[in-house]
Every structure is written in structure tokens, then in C-alpha cells.
Length: 149
Image (tube, rainbow, N blue to C red; front, side, top):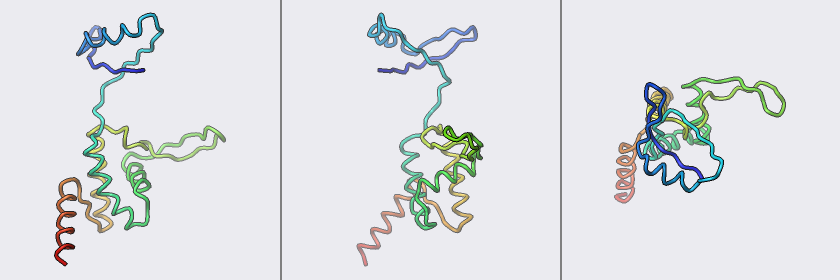
């Protein structure tokens, strides 16, 4: 059982928690147990709304290109942030892998960069990506035309 608590570190290295009472109440449940404390800089993870807009935009493009959406996403991330050479854990041989391979680990700003980069790359191939509300409006218009036909 793990929990996260937010706070900030002062100039002299002291940790100040946003909700110290909640932290103490949670910590009391672990009284007498050995615990592990991890401190890291806070990141704002990409939102579910951003993620849904991205996937709804690139899926038709990927299929038009003959790829699975995840393959296209991986390629976009590799083109945007580059590749790394890493040794295989089994053979030790060097493999080339995307520097950032998981969109779920991107913060909101990085995800915006990915979305904008995808729009540019799509346009370079003659495809227009519709993101978010644009996509919903286009889908509704297509459904309306289909009903009228």
C-alpha cells in the first residue's frame, strides 16, 4: 500500500507538506513498519482528455498508412525526441530504441509537443489530423451526412 503526498522543499532542505495532518494520519497506519521514502520533482502528467484526442486523431491516419496506431505513435515520439542505444539485457547487443517510448510518462507540455509534431508530420504526408473538438465536430457532420443520404 503506497500513498503520495505533495509539498515543497525549502532553501535549507526542509520538506513542507501541503497536507501534513493527512500525512501523519496515513503514517500512523504504518507504525512499527519499515518504510521507503521517495522524493522526486512533481510532474503534471498528460491528461486523459489529451490522450483521447491524440489517439482519436492518429488512429485513422495510422490505418491509412497501413500501420497500427501504437506503431505510429512510437515512430512519432522517436522522431521528435530521438533514439538511444541500449544493450539488450539478454545478449548485451546494442539496440536502438526511442529515447521516450511511453506517452503515459509524458507531462502535459511534452504531450502538447507530441500532438503538434504529429499534426506537422501528418500534414507533410498530405493528411490533416483533427484534434479534440475538431474531431468530434467532423465526426458529427459525417454522421449527419450519412443519415441524410
